[in-house]
Image (cartoon, rainbow, N blue to C red; front, side, top):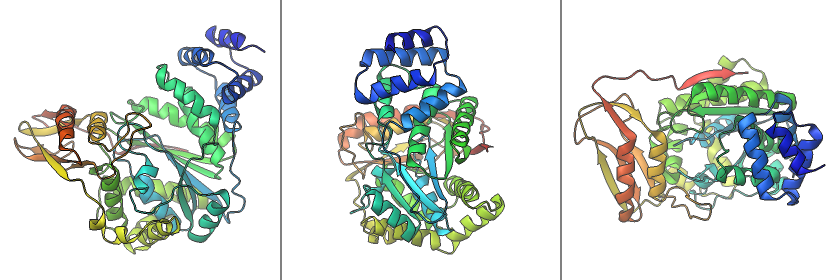
Length: 433
């Protein structure tokens, strides 16, 4: 079998066979296929798409390219959650402890961020002492003891996907739906939970800008999960507005704590409860309405916050910072951003707000960059709010005041005003089961 022929087949619109896909994936993993041939096939896939059968074979081949977790030692059905990513998305830190508090066994493996703010692991590592790396034995013991873990992806999880993603990132093929679906689901299947809930985001701050495209992606991933024997569902959520008011690692931990303590209600709380309810529904089979009630009750009676502290403590984190968030190190400098005109905020380009946060030091432009956990943005006014000139709409935080020179104009560019209030799409747009 030759890679040349596989590229030609896909270039000409043929459906690749399972053996062709496995040959390609194995060659990517062991380095026998040169980058230029991998890039050529990725572009052919980008242009011609893949059939459902190709996507499934590609997903399984990438899953099997590395380590697959064995969660059989965990007592009870395990559940995992994946978000396609967004600005201010700190739902994992809220959803995981609520789900564990109502009896779910949650194995959450997350990545680090590239661009915008950090990933979930970066945010959790804002908590002094928190350890995101566990051995397999430690993971099983921890989940059996406290009901959940939140750890980083192992390097040997789906290594073929890592090689392919790095090339997608530099060959303008990131947006390919088959490649996105197989990339996400290969890692989720390798993590091996019995149930998978997908939080698929759309809007200006999401990978999929259009809700229709997000729907297609979610449907494909649910199909893959079910084909692999996993209970799988997807919730489509709106990322045209930053999720919550905080963007930045420590700032997002503090906001998550407020939600878990029952001190903050609003869109972030609503989405977190909905995601938790669907996770519990998949894992337990209880009616969705009952799972919502239990999730809300766990926040109200304090068991969700208590569970968060148990998880953090079990992973080496100092829970004093959760009890008293004023202990967190804060950025040395702050800069208020003020409204430019009278009227309603009609639109927030959430991607640009994420860029502004990155320029403050809260994210990585390249993977070698260091994250400044204290940097970020607190948003005071959002889409639909009425403002007057000079009114503070956001506060930017950085440990170098020179960063404001670049970040403030980017944030201002993200805000559009209108004389009339604009109808918005709902936060929770659709459910796919």
